[in-house]
Length: 157
Image 1 (tube, rainbow, N blue to C red):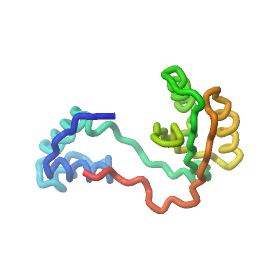
Image 2 (cartoon, rainbow, N blue to C red):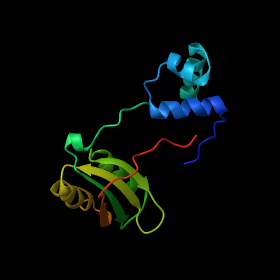
Image 3 (tube, helix red, strand yellow):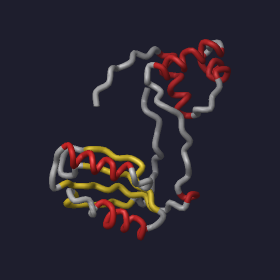
Image 4 (cartoon, helix red, strand yellow):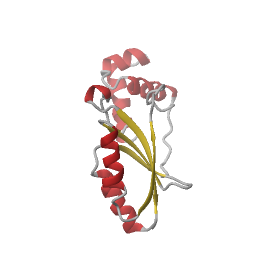
């Protein structure tokens, strides 16, 4: 996945770091943090959005408060490869809300999935009734997260 690198000055980098920590910052608050006027800060944010560097804003939710007590990483190995297999597997992954992110990999596993489930029984169902039920999946290996001691962090800018 190759993207054109966007050149950032020091103010852009500080703006992005601030927004990754708190996406609710107003143009006025950003301006105060960056020693800019509110309109200058707002224009910079709009330019970074228009250039595709800022791809969206979201809220971080507490999985435990939502009843999602099991987080796991699931490696999937395919028996067959090809465009149709990849497309059907990607559709399957997209249809499962428990799978919150997915990557293609080099090495023994073809895919790595990050999943949140209510309990071990729900993880078992996802693995056996959904993933292993796909005709091209040959092997699934899961690692259950015992503790996440570093939360998902902002990207370095």
